[in-house]
Amino acid sequence: MKLIFATHNQHKLQEIKLLLPKSIELVSLADLKFTDDIAETGATLKDNALLKARYIYNKFHINCFADDSGLEVEVLNGAPGVYSARYAGLRKNDFDNNQKLLAELKNKPNRNACFKTVIALVLNGNALAFSEAKRYKNYELKEHTFEGVIEGTILTEMQGTHGFGYDPLFKPNGYDKTFAEMSTEEKSKISHRGLAVNKLVNFLSANTY
Image 1 (cartoon, rainbow, N blue to C red):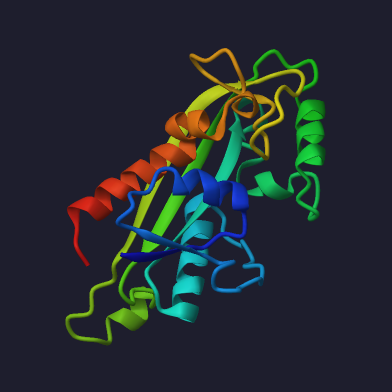
Image 2: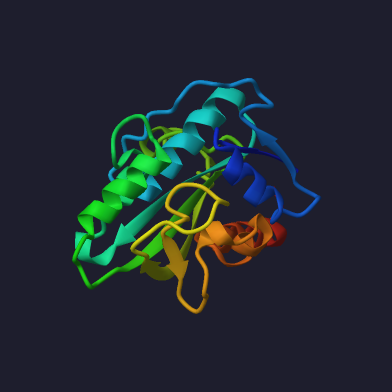
């Protein structure tokens, strides 16, 4: 089965390649020579994931999935959330984002947080809006979403050089190192993205399209 992963993020691409079975031919946006940015204007991670998956399916007409991930910090009322990638500005600079988060949490004892990923899957021409789909007899909209969440804490300083985003500050519960101190293989097995991908793989294994 050929499946587009609608992302420009090479770190995400490598993580997911480790998790998908060999029966799935993963196609990246780079393989398609698609370099445009897709505006993430949704109010939630699910909104943004669906927006990206629908956009890419409509353009290439190949089964497609997209993800949106965010860090939700308890004491910040769920921020940065959908703004995680651009928390410190539109440059989407990981270091700046981490420094802003540390500043926001200065002197705050509650450092509980979670990483969340939502994957949206669009299959076999199901990118039409619901109102449009109703015009066609026997037209079934096949869109599915899968969520993965991992709880943890935000450290007071960055640790580790692997990964990306907030990985140097996030230590998952039950582990003694941050995501950025883990190998890609270690992180993929327990991460929010890994949990969501496993749900995606289980779904694809149980359903034939």
